[in-house]
Length: 387
Image (tube, rainbow, N blue to C red; front, side, top):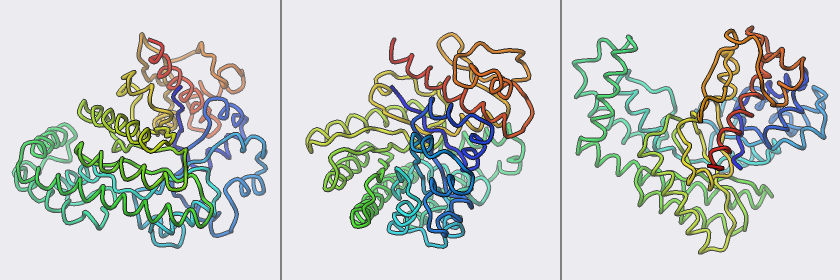
């Protein structure tokens, strides 16, 4: 069974308690993923754990919180991390944050190669990127962006118009695939990203052991199979020094998956199973930054995945949209189009909470739609495994 970890803000958990759907959250998932935010920074500086803070400040029941694992991602913006926690973003400081906040799992400090490649295209189109570029690969990203921009510079005047921008972006992606100079830089980007990811992981694992923080989640990166295998082999060797059971995440780049992306995930899974077997460790697999549920229904992959985090359950709920089953797939429908709904999820079974789900207004109580969306996504994925 695939478990979905919804990506939430801490206030979502507070509102879940306030409006009566916290218990429902624990029914549809074993945990949530959080990212750096101002409230977490305040908790860190107070010296309390997240769960202590929620109990003491907002009266959340400890017994319900104990049913909910908290996974914390380090985010992609180093400046925000420093502003929130008052610390530079380093491997050791990440462990300090994870340990003091008392999270159940913390994502290791990786370099997401696919995300950086996407950033290079953004720089080529706009002159800047929406994400922080890691210093270890900054020069490579800037070189890739320069080559792309040189080849599309005559078409950049219309990038503010969505249709034209999409067309130019497709041209940029084609350059990434076909240009030999870009290809050489991609090889370099992939290798540097995995070597630095592994180096940081080793530092984090050793420091985590000293602090007694056990559940660090390493991330497999790499654009090419040889680098993916290098990352898998070294990651399992490092993790197995102190743990015989652990979770490994596979980075997806936080975007819609192409056929090539899916094959890279399949390769990574096979290598994780191979090296875990050689080292005699029990490894579960998490898909990190996974996007649309319909983009990954490959049963060979799903049966080897333990969990995945998804921003879509919350994002669509806030938009007033919910997932509905639709002849072997799922689709999104705005609640304005619905008078009623036939659903067995924990919120739809409760008349009061069901009214929140169907209320199209943006009031926070109506974020109960998050529960419905997690339920439908999870049911859809696990139905694929029965085929």
